Structures are given as C-alpha cells and as structure tokens.
Length: 287
Image (cartoon, rainbow, N blue to C red; front, side):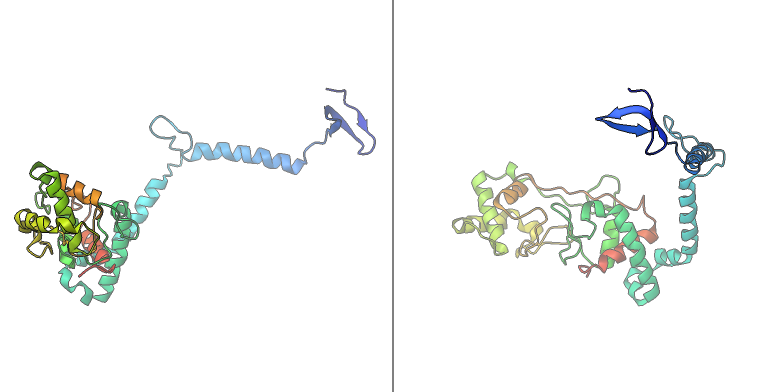
C-alpha cells in the first residue's frame, strides 16, 4: 500500500491503494446516498421488531404488532366461504342428476371443483386430469366403476380399495402366477392383446381363449367387455391403465394390480365432493 497523494487532475487525494498501477481516489459517498443507507438500516431494525422476522427453532419472532400472513389468509378464506355459504349449502343438498338444470349453481360447482381438483387430485391424475401409468385418465369415456356424475361422486367420497372407508369400492384381481404356468400366462397375454387388435402371437390364441374362458370371464365377462359392478376393465378397447406390452401384461396377470384411492369424505365437505364430481364429469369423459 502506497502513501496517499494529492491528484492534481481531480484535485482529490488517493487512498494509497494501487492495483496494477491503477490508483483509487478517496472520494466520499454523496451525503444523500449515505443518509439513505442509514435510513434503510433503521427501517430494517424497526421492521424486524414490529413484524415476524427472526427464525427460531420451531417458529419465528411474532413482532409486537401481532401481524400474521397465515391469519390474513385464513380470514380471507373465511370471508369467501361466508359469501358462498348459500351456494355451498345448495350444492351439498342437490340431487346431482339435476345439477345441470341449475346453470348458475353448475357453473359455481365446476369453478369450485377445479380448485378442489388442483389441490387434492392433480398429484395423481395430473393437472389436466389426463392421468398417468396406474392413474386413470379422467378425460376419456373408460370408467371402471361408472362415469355418470353420481358414480364419480361416490368414488370420490369413499375411494377405492382403501382400508379407511368400509364403503370404498372394492375388487381384487387374483395373482394368476400362483395358479398358471408361464406358458399359460403367455397364452393369456396373446389372447388379451388380440381382443383390442394389438400385435400378438397368433399361435397362442387357441390356448389363450380357453384359459380366458376358464379363469377370466367371471369378472371380465364372456365378451371381455368388463363389469362395472366389480370394477373389472373392458379388455376390448385401446385404454390400458398400466400398459399393453408383453412385459406389462405378463406382470399384471402374474402378480395382479391393486391400485388404491383414498376416501376424500373425511377431508372434503359434501359440497366439495359434489363440486369436484361436477368438474370431472364435464371434462369430457363423464357420462
């Protein structure tokens, strides 16, 4: 560090710092800038005392004003619920088959149902309700348990194959790997693929037809078109919940599938259940 010197060109002393021959002038900050900095520091101290600011182990300092963003949100939610209380009461009590006859209530139900779906259902069925592997697409017209609005509401309310609700829809496919040999399962795979026009091993069709008749028609029906009372899927269309490849169908037949949907009635009100049923129903696949 060099000694400060007086710079004739700028009429200012240097700080004595020199970087690769470049010297630094000892030019003070403008007063207005300095006072602005001090003001922001004072403001930050006052703000951190007045409002929640300093993190603690399990919470934060409350601030002497007692302000809470959570309380503000809760108050706003309560205000909106109060404003919509009449509509929610009507929605909770309505016969869903007549909902479309009440245009304003139906519009409210669809709008409210979109919010319920986004918060509770999109994690599995996707934000657009198109589903994923193992999670049904709610936009098509393939419904294991029925796609009219009442059937949808029942599914939402009680769920599927869960242990929390005794009224949950329930069915269970046997694991045929415990009963059939690998070559027999391969024949069943070929036959099931043939039902919907997929590429398959034609040499196995005759054996697969017999095996299907002996083991699968009780649930899927003689024509393999499924049974909604049992939640048995239609095997003749192009909709496959888990996939239709040799490997996937072999896994399905060998070990079975057991998808579970939770009952939403403990978490959602009757109005919310009916609202999300209305929303799903109008997405395109509802019957």
